[in-house]
Structure formats: structure tokens, C-alpha cells
Length: 433
Image (tube, rainbow, N blue to C red; front, side):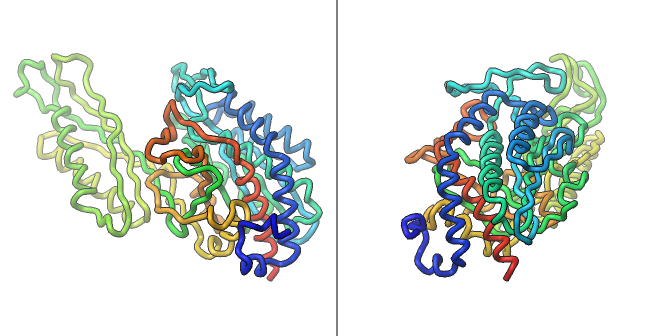
């Protein structure tokens, strides 16, 4: 027993009930034995990626395995989502564990035996498809968790709800999807979830390590569109026009002052990025319209609303000064991912048991976003990061998520399996007290 708990301090071990220590040893043994299968699942899914709201084969793969474990399965949730329900042999809370299933329209450059060569249709175009954010590993780890917990069913305090979610990267076009639609369709009810947990692999955190942050953790994500209307003219007579291209360029420049001059960055980060600027068809025609698209990232709702107001004011007033008009639309894609502080304090020990106390640490908030945030509107939530960077790697040189060179080392995915399994048992034990 002491060898199995070598990563924990003696005081932590003493704080655990004897039955929790016994379950930890069993979990570690089972997760280690299952690791080759988890890696095999991850690589199969990596080789067969599917885009958001199109995860049909992935959902079939997940549902088939859950059914083979005797887990109650519901399919077709939020289009292609899968829910598994495992009722433990002892009374206790309902704990939800979530994995996302979708891939991205990215062409893989990493030379792997299981490299993706898949193409699919995206917004009317044929595009390459790649698991460029690690969702393949999330699916595999949650399937491994389901297998371990199913083998320990009689000892589980309460019920485990496995959420395999589509479209975390955002549904295509005007479709609904992702966590928001899963919540809308009742994933957090029947039975009502008491706490929800999720993890994300990171290409810039060393394998075997876990990082987290209590409170606001990941930013909300808003997408904005600014349509500038001017007056067209021949390119040789610009004085006859009200140029939407020049006006749009002024709006882009003026938007930079929201972060540089209007936001209190000591309190929390703010990001305003214009990612698209489209106008015109020919080089000798001043067009009538310019369209700007971008994203907003904030860490609290007050800052979010202030940024929205400033974007609207800057766009409309800049256009007005040029004799043009501007209309602004802002669409919220995700909320702030907020880790319930009390829940984090209670459950960090579960992560330490999975990875070793020295391998678990806090991190700063991130301007990346996660639609896991929607589950936190219905129950206390805890989202954390698991390392996928090879040992000795340089985080600054690690290939970024959402890029063709994205890569993770999958040799320690059992740490994620152990973390989820420990959470289930430890949360149930804590609720009894």
C-alpha cells in the first residue's frame, strides 16, 4: 500500500479513509493494465476523425463500447452526443464526467503511423480533417474510465454520468450544437448532476503533470461581425466614394485601444482580435461594403459587457466620422469556464493521488475558451489540464493546438483515467460526511 501511495505525503494518506486508500490502489492497478487499450483507442480515433456535429462513427464506437460494459446508453443527444449512465452499488451523488469528440478542418503534417488522411465537407468545401486539439485522447481516457468504473460498480457511491459531447469546437454555420445544446436537451438532469468534471490534454505541459486554477479559468468567447456601408466609386476617383475599406481599417486600429487604453488588465486579461477583413472584388473598384469578423475574450461578465459596448461605440462612431455606417452583431459562443473554488479544494487530492503530489500545480488563467463552461451553469464544475508534451520538451517550442503540427505523447493517458476514477470515489465519500 505504501508503495502505491508513494506520491502522497504521509499526512495526506492519513487523511484518507481506509476504503478510499484501497480503492486508489485498485484504480491504479486497473488503469495501468488498461493503458495499452486506451492508447489503441486514441490512435484509432485519431486516424478516423470527424468534424463538429458529424461525429457519427465516433459516437457509434463510443456507444458500442459502453454497452459492452453493461452501461445504460443514450444516443443522439445534441445531434451526435452519447450519454452513459452507470449506477453504483452504494447510495451517493451523481457525478458527470465529460469528453469532447470533434476534430478540426486541419491537414496533419506530423508523420505518424496513425496519421489522419480523412477529408470531409465543411461549409460547402472539401477539407482535411485532423484531431488537432487532443479530443481523441479525451474520448479514449473517458472510455478507459468507464471500463475501470464498470468493473468496480458494486463499490461506487452513487451514479456516474459519462458525457461524450459533439461540437466543442463550434457547430458549423448556423447549426446549434456543443455543450449549450446538450444542456438545453437536459444532459444535467434525469438524474440531476451534483458535480461535473472535465479535462483537456495540453501539448505544452509535460506528460504526467496536471495543472488547474480555482475560480475563473478560461475566457468567454464572443464572435463579432462589423458591416461597414459606404459609397462605391471607380478606383481612379476616390473622392467620389465613401470608402468602406479605409473606414474598416480605421475601425480595426481603433479597436486596439480597447485593450491598450480602456481595459484594466491588472484585474483580468482582455483580447479583441479581428481575424477576417473582406471587401471588394476588383483592384480598381472602391466597393460599397466591408465586413470585419473577430473574437473577444474576457474573464468576467462585467468586462465582457464593457467590451461589447466599446466595440459598438467605436465601430459606429468611426464610421459616422467618415460618412459611412456600421452595424455590429456579437454572438456569445462560450461562457467563462469557472472552477467552483470549494469543489477544487475538495478534489485536488484526487488529482494528486492520480499523478503524485509533486506533479500537480496551479496555473494562470487562459484566454482560450471551452464550452464546458455551460455545464457549470447547472452544477459545481471543475476543469483541469493534463500534460501531453514529451518529457524534457520545451513548452515554448511545443506545437500549438489547432495547427497541422499538433502532437501529444499518449504514453501516460492512464493518469487521466486515474484522475477521473479517483474523483468519482472521493467525491462520493466526501458527500457522505
